[in-house]
Each structure stands twice: as structure tokens, then as C-alpha cells.
Image 1 (cartoon, rainbow, N blue to C red):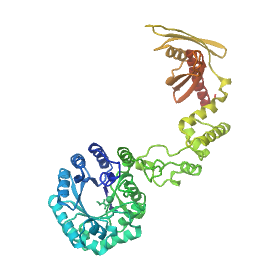
Image 2: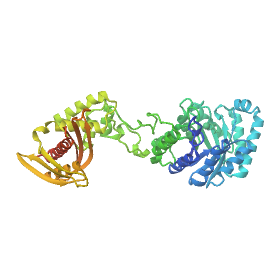
Image 3: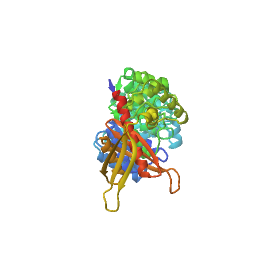
Image 4: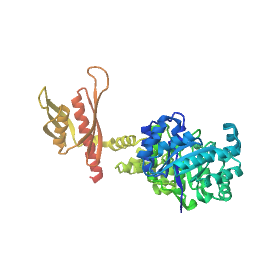
Length: 510
Ligand code: KIV
Ligand code: ZN
């Protein structure tokens, strides 16, 4: 298998997105992450464009080890000097010189003819080469350039020492078959083409940037210029994650590899999105929130039987750890059962059917049903008959407390017609009550959440206490109400304890 070099230009072309401006510290943070992603080259910026960009490129050149660090320059002496100044401390520096090669660029932008443009390009290349051994030359707007002129330019810049020649589809005009033919034409007609690496740089104006990059590889390109999340000028550049994952997933077809550590893709995508303030669309290939989420019942059923039914990429291969099953109104029984058993419940027959019905009626009202919603539905169904089988019932409490005194609570519960009592001290009166209850039942419970709310706004308002406790693998909620909030709390705690005993007895079958 041959290697495809990944040239990341998120920090240069990607940063040309309106409003996505990064400060030097942010650019370094992204560059360090791109190095962890193991791209081959990082185009760190366009140093002549602003003092801030110069500083950022310089900082990246001195701090980021591993990839080649590239600085962009027009075919202008001052640009090239500044680019070199910014990257000369890099482990592997590269100057990237670009000059339009299409007639429309040559005539309208520079007011030159083809020969004069070629002279300017060669002069710039030679100057860059006198500073830096690694120089890339881009024939801007190559896909709209006369092919014979393109061949002539490429032959001469390669003879002058270009280590990489880049064929940009600057305006996203190319279509795959035609672009593939252009690369193969270049490979055939440029006599010294084997002395350099052929690169492509595709824009996405027609949504074809990834397809054009892949067909270019098939026809001889060995470097692909791309950006994280497909960011870039106008409709963006070819997206790094799409190209890398297409090559990896379809290695049977492409027979190439990249050195990218794909497990870092999601982390990189999220960092770029956050720092550039550019949200990723939910259905974006590979990195969108829905890229690995399955919501239809048929798909969820298939995924649970064998992930390969509806997944061509393992989510963990791109660094995704979140659950793939999203519960919605279209989820079927299989997906809900799977979620419930992941939560530690074992529901069968009628009980499961009741949960399923309630789930569907909640799902009809909500776009997405979260784990917490499912937990409440399941517990409501499970505990529907608990009233008849409660182990403990609350009788009364007394609390001794006051300024500078350690609060002490005495609690009375009833179990099987027998009154049980215990006294305990606590950090506050409620803590003392909960500890006294634990003493009576002979078990410790971890208090995970505790809230008291007034139902009305009068002084004699009913207080409703909600307690969430955990013991071993069991976790339950209890609610209690009273005009006395200490009593409401005690009742809520006893209810939660009863629920734990109930779950325990269901599990042990007695
Ligand atoms: O799109 C383009 O042509 C560019 C060049 C500078 C490579 O970004
Ligand atoms: Zn570009």
C-alpha cells in the first residue's frame, strides 16, 4: 500500500472563514492537536497577512514537533522572506508559494501574459529555494488553466526544485472524472513529474471536494490538502476526516494508507469547532452529532444484532465513546429493552409492555427520550404495586437541636406490625433523621440528591421532599410530603429505602 500525505490547512485556508479568526495561543493549541492527530504537514498560516498571524506561525514553528510546518507566500519577495522568518526554527519547515495559472487570474489579477507569469513564478520559487530546501509550488486555479500551459509551468518549477507541486481546484469548479483525467494527464505529460510529489487542494463549491481529492489520488496525487470539519474559504475545503476515513474504510478499493491517528479525529473536530466558533452540522459525515446515532427502530434492531448491519465505521475508530442508540418515537422494543437492561433493570412480559407504552407516549411529546426519563418511567411501573408490599412505614420523629448543639433525632418506623426505634446524631436535623432510619433498617445508604420544595407560597405550605439514594447497584428515588419539612424528608427517605428492598427482592426472587 502506498502512503497518502495529509497536509492540513485548517489554520490557513480554514481560518479564512469569515469570523473564524484565531489568536496565536488558540492557533498553537490547534496545531498541537493536529500533531497528535499525526498529519504530515500543518499549514500554519500566511505570515505576511498580519503581525498576529506571523507571531502565530512563529510560535507553532518553535513549539510543534512532528509534522512539517508550512507558511504560505504569494510569488512576492517580501512574502517569501516573511514566511521564512516565521518558520525557520521549525523541525521541518516548508515555504508554500502560489501564483495563479489560469488566463483569468493571469490577465485580470496581474495584468500579465502567460510567459511573464511563469517568469514571476520561477523567480519566486528560486528565491524561496535559496532560503528553504522544502518548497511547495501551487498553480492557483489549476482546474481552469489551459492544460498545456499547466504542464509547462509544472515542468519548469520542478526543474527549479519544487519538492511538491500542488494542483488546486481553487473555485471548486472541477468534477471528479475530469479532475482525475487532469491529474493523470499531468503525470503523463510532465517529463520530470517523478522528481516531486503531486498534491491536490480542492474546494467544495459544488460539494465535490472529497470526491475530487479521492479521484486525484487514484490518478497519481500523493498529497491531499484538507481541513478539519471541511472549513475553508466560501463552501470550504475537502474535509480531512472524510478523506482519511474513506481511505481507511475502503482500503480494499483504494489500496492506500495515511499516518493519521483516526482516534483523535473527534477531539480535533470539537476543538476546531469550539475555538473557531463554527458549529458542525449534525449530519456532517464522520464528525456530525448524528454521524453514528441510530434512531429508527429497524436500524436500532439491526445495530443491536450486529453493528455491521448499519455501521461501516466503528465509532471508537474516530474517538467516539457516546452511546449510539438515540431513543425517539421511532425506536422499537428491542432498543428500549437494551437501554433498560444497560440501566440494570430486568423487566419482562406485562411490565415491559407497560413501560413501552408509557415510553411511546413520552416520545410522542419529546424529540428525544433521555436515560433519566426512561429511569423514571421504569421506576413508576416497577413501584406501582409497592404500596401493598412496603417493608417499613413511617410513624414519627423527634429532633433535639439548637445553637451550638449536635442535632439528635429519634425515629419510629413500623415493620410487620412491630415498632422499631433508633436515635442518631447528624450534621443537621435532616442528616440525623436519615442516620436514625439507616440504624433501624441496618444498612447504610449513599445520599445522592436531596431537595425540598414548597407546593404553595403560604406560610403553611406543604413541603415536598425528594431523596435519591444508592446502595450496592440499586439507585432509587423517594418522595414525601407534609407541612413539616422534616417529616416530609423522613417519609421520602423511608420510601426510597423501601424501593431498594423491593428491587433487591425482585432480583433475588423472594
Ligand atoms: O485555493 C487555493 O488555490 C489556495 C492556494 C493558496 C493553494 O488556497
Ligand atoms: Zn484554497
